[in-house]
Length: 579
Image (tube, rainbow, N blue to C red):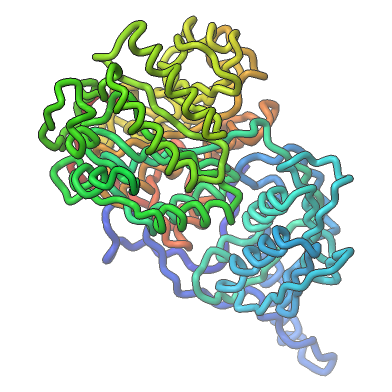
């Protein structure tokens, strides 16, 4: 399939005043393709009549170019039934009508906020017992729709659009699909003259896996709340529903804990390379959680234990095995630090920290890390993990940890996050047989801090190079030998930040690979097709450019030639084989 070219806005090929690696785009709209000429007059000369007819024909051709196919959506929908007779154009007077439910109303307001800037339309939101499109958009909660907890149906017809779901989450995902069916100009922050046409037909959709996420490491380098919110928006666009925040590591402690205040004042004052570090207050963290919740994203906080704890030991040397405060660490090596597993004070510390974080986190998960604790081995390690797992359970939360937790005794509900680079892992498979479920994050497919190619200026290559195709071409359901599909909870794409220092860096590494992992988590295996995916992905480029989102112009994707896309970024980088 050939990617369709948007008519508005005009994408200028210019790099002026554009940072390396960021897509540049002219926001000057081209003449509107919707300016339909006045009706033809029977008294006009033949030449004028022919000219008007030609102009009308050009308008028709341009208008058709703005209309996407119903299947041009990422992640790929489960079922698509086009109706060429049902195309619909969003009118200026459209109203969004929604079921009278607070969560559904919030989704309707979110839709209006997405559409108002580019259209300039008021798009008022109103509720009704039985919402009907009436020429506009209806969001309908329907328990009998048999769509599951996150499924939805979008019906586009000449009389308007209806999004149906059993839950507000399903409505939200339907809204993300509707957004992609509109022309790319819908992403403009300013009004654009555009024919806001949608292709007619029906999409029925639901996710393959319940857990679909990404991880942001804010410990190696600290990122402001606004940067995290922007990452949340990227996740929401592609129907990801979990944000894993790696909040603590050797280089910095990023979450305030009232009962142990030096964790942030001393432990949070550093980062890789010697920068100032930083931390989130409880108000900051609550803002992140609230923003994510409004987008049906669950925050999964990680407090990494027993290793990756140098920042905690700087703040509280009583937790160290030798009770001596180590110097702050700003490098990228791993495996040298650990809290004392033989001291009861360590478990008081863990209970206090996890208790405060749990109280701030409405989601069911607490991630306890567990990786690369090279100096805590054998029975000492498994005994430590088993005790911490019980602390998590006593807080009413479900424990998540890296797959190094596998040898420890199983606790009901336990989730292992698998980051291996080969599918043969009998220890993890045995843990699954004992009841564990897996989140799949294979380092050589899903780690978004890996380089795209040898000349990628930031990132690592210890797990291999990961271009878009490699991020896409694997099956979470069969990836780990001896682990059945039903034991796989979902997928997650981690982004470690040893070499990542800015939001521009984050977006350069996230996009365009994040949508690839998102499709693996959402779409049925039957829809998996690289050639089709890369064409659909190419259609996202003009949307990112219009929204001012930087991304990497991966050479294996046929991007639209009329847009300016990222060049390789000239950014200093490290390349340490770390997790």
